[in-house]
Image (cartoon, rainbow, N blue to C red):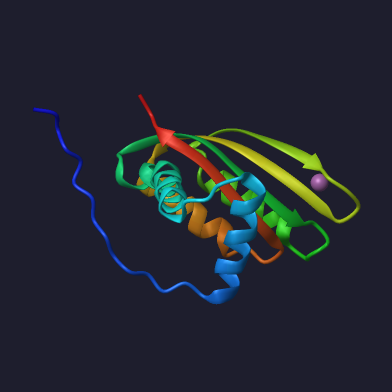
Length: 137
Ligand code: NI
């Protein structure tokens, strides 16, 4: 007997503008089945966030910020000195006259990294933070 996959069906409310954008992207990618697309989106969401339920993680945090905002460089440097236990290395790229990018290599406790992300999000001048984290071996 082959193993049958149990499927769940449930309704979700999605704003019409989001559906319009979604349909446009689906059309661009040549995807016709909304269910398949939602399954893929959920898998991606899980892969991206699984690190939050494991003990130790490794990967990177990328921060885009406006260095002309007063105190932002100092606040980012202070945060890195506070989280030396999970930071392996940092690369600073001067993107243009106003914007800078930090790429921080990370390894350590996921709880500690959640604290670091919280700290980074609270800094004025930070425009965007993206992390790529996986379970550490
Ligand atoms: Ni810079």
